[in-house]
Image 1 (spheres, rainbow over the protein chains, first blue to last red):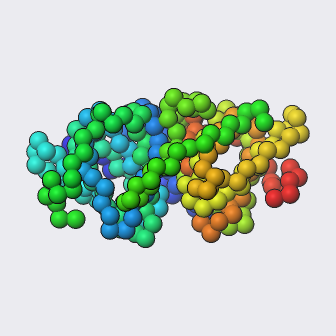
Image 2: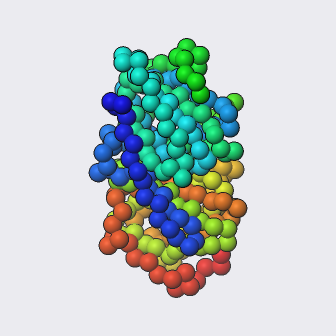
Image 3: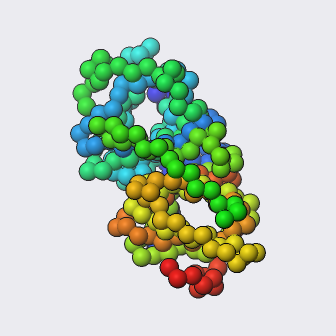
Length: 135
Length: 135
């Protein structure tokens, strides 16, 4: 889907505890640094829909498993992917796309490395049933 | 300790899963973005000692509990702090200081938001018993 990039990330074994890459400045999808925050999502819960008008999201699942669904309202097109340490990739979502995500594991956490600091005026939220998708 | 900053971070309640702040571009301690990665550490294991000659570390514990120990070899001075969601703060460590960390919980993970991409030539590692500290 235009505006969506999936980038496989390295996991480096260490006998005392592994290392998991998230993002480098030189990576494709990096669009500047504004803010980093974690979001947790309980099993079976869905956060969304939200559309950012300026922010590029760079999402990494650091705990559990999360299903992401992206919707392009201009093309009426959906994109979906389940991410976890088993399928360890960074999901880049450019501005202008709708996004929702669902907790699949017992405990689920993502990191968002965003190019802008949080600003409620640059995002639009609608209820989950406003955009029909079979989660 | 000079070169060490502890910054309390917001935790925002959400019925579907809480939000945990990590870092904003406008925060004190932010020194540019180079790379973000996760490091896990098993209970009772210690990673260290390592000294970065150029990198500023910004460390956030996103899972479990981790004890950090910082050593200033010019002043022969130690600093120690235990971080977790219960004591949710960002630990900034400027270059030139030695650092080690120990896993205290069952599962422990930190995020490092570093100002440089990983480059093994800018860090020095020594065995844990080379700098005496009673972990």
